[in-house]
Amino acid sequence: MSILRRLTLLAAAVALALPAARAQDTDNEDRARGPGSGADFSTAPRVDVHKPVVLIPLYMRDKRIHGLQPFQELVDKAPAGSVLKVPAGNYSGPVHLKKRLTIEGEGQVVIDGGDKGTVFVLETNEATLRNLTITGSGDSHDADDTCLNIRGHGNLVENLNIADCLFGIDLKQADHNIVRNSKVRSKDFELGVRGDGIRLWYSHDNLIENNLITDTRDMVAWYSHRNVYRGNEGRRSRYSIHFMFANDNIVENNRFYDNAVGIYFMYMEGGAARNNIISHATGATGMGLGFKESSDILLENNEIIYCAVGVGSDLSPFQPDTTIRFVNNRFAFNGIAVQLTSELGGNELSGNTFEGNLTDMFQAGRGRGEGNKNKWEGNYFDTYQGFDRDEDGVGDTPHEEYAYADRIWMEIPNARFFKTSPVLELLDFLERLAPFSNPDLQARDEKPRYIKPERRTEGSAS
Image 1 (tube, rainbow, N blue to C red):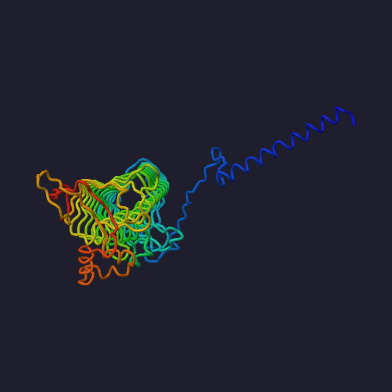
Image 2 (cartoon, rainbow, N blue to C red; image 1 turned 60 degrees about the horizontal axis):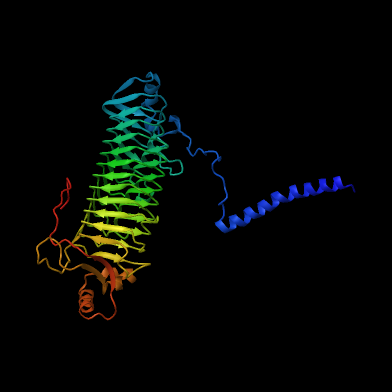
């Protein structure tokens, strides 16, 4: 074999070996850094997650609406950009609005979906719906049967009455919309199988304002950022608001009564809840404010009263070097005011009021008994046992929360039923007098307030 041919074969072998060697090195590196670490998402195509609109035609809906004038006829006749003033009366659905239009009801305008499918789909930008009653959706969770499905941007929806619906108002990939001054009520189902009153899904920068949501399942925001919930009232539902993978949302000046959970922050970063009243979140899962692996959230000037648990926090704040701040809130007459199921630190509590709670602080799980990773400063506790001899408004000695007989019901939840019973109260007294074991430190406030601060929240509950 000639030297030239040998050199050619050698070069070819090297060329074939180099990619394999690089691939082997890459595989070793990926195994060291974790699976998928070498993936390149910069050129990956965007997947359209928009669920297509499927409207069931009128003839397949309940016969009670077959004799009504189809509302779609009015919409089709109105020129784009015009104002459609609808005379009072009953109309049949479904309705699919695909052009910019202002629709105003004059008097009592009812659009009935005949208990089948979705009633009204708003699939356009900068439209307005005002003074309408939309009712009678279907009951299929698989089909997301809804009274009003919004799929456009910059729309205004106000003064609507949404009743007898599975899902009330459902925003899907819809940004910069305003939903305000509307009433939403679900179908008369058991709590777990109702639909959500107002749902945001991949929808950003929306304003949800001054709405009344009653007897629904949840109000939720999934993968939806920078929305504002202001001045709403929620009653007799499961979650007043449930955030999941939804960052930088603001919840302010709302009133939530008799719901299982007030505001729940799940896998969320950024945002604030301020000037809200959350009352009577009771039952086995009753909770005013809940946190699950969330970070950098401000809770300010809220009233959390008559709840089973005022604050329930699990692995929050989650991201390193982040905080969750509780400032000037009132926790009153709750079973447990603040419950942390894992002590990672990063919670900062200042200027809060704790009064009338069965237990102000409950630390469970990892880190129990340390009580020094979170920052407590300048809070008022009606259980404080010190003095203020120099009358500077600050207690002379720190306020410390220890778990004595509390450890019984902390470690055995079923024993919580007997909390405040004479036997447990006596045992707690004896434990404090002469501890049988070292009590767990739950929290320590170096500068507790001695005088209860005045509340300044507008519409504050007393």
